[in-house]
Length: 78
Image 1 (cartoon, rainbow, N blue to C red):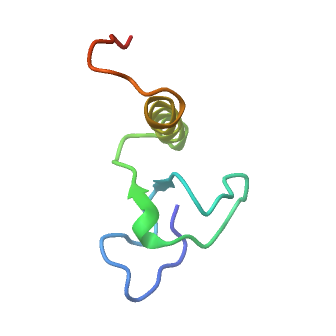
Image 2 (image 1 turned 180 degrees about the vertical axis):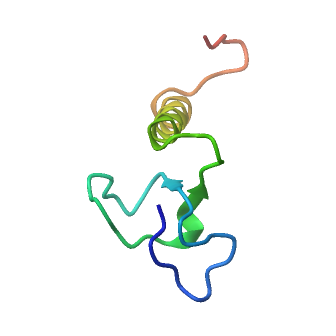
């Protein structure tokens, strides 16, 4: 949740629940300063726990598809 925000940040507000994925790392920190352009606003009705799961699944999928194994056109993904 955003506690403070820079004067030049647009599209985010104090109190917004946000998520991030990528660098700089530090997900175990209770609070941190993070670049606003790397944040994703969590939609209303989605809990922090669900938001964290969604971000993790997306990163895992990206990593597996683009960094671990090159999927070809004749293959099927499950």
